[in-house]
Length: 216
Image 1: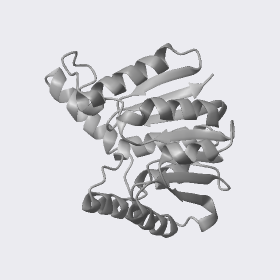
Image 2 (image 1 turned 90 degrees about the vertical axis):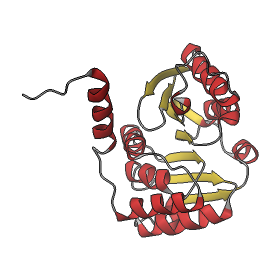
Image 3 (image 1 turned 90 degrees about the horizontal axis):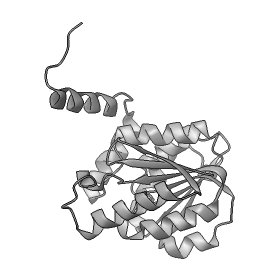
Image 4 (image 1 turned 180 degrees about the vertical axis):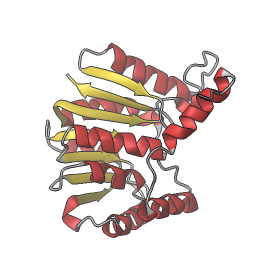
């Protein structure tokens, strides 16, 4: 059997293979292209597949998404959820959500499968019910991570899953010399989750890093 010389090159090739393992259809490719067009960084295919897996494994019926974007992650989540599941997705940008709404429809999801809320997540989340959700996905700026994790702990049922995108801080997470605000915030957040008795976490090296944690 052929082998690839050099650990660095083999690791890079393996990660590339993992990202392309699950292919995206026309709807997802369109949503991704529109995200690029409006300047939104969508989750990678590998991260999307992981989100679909988490939703399917938890038989998720009620999911909260912080950061709608153009609907890339939302489509992945909906495809893993139960057929009667509802995705509550929050974003401050009306135009992004307009695009996402159209893409959800093109993906075949009726309007009742999504609850699209425009506003600041930290203003919206307090209005959502305690312990009523199976999965909370955070795809937002790192400065809000601590508050979003606190909100997820309240919103999730026992056994529910928190998924936090960007947990590798653009590759800087393991660099002790990286002391910028974003990296420090991510580092402190994932450390707090790792050391908390409330979470059972794992850091998945897909996309920009996906921290998944089950509420104990």
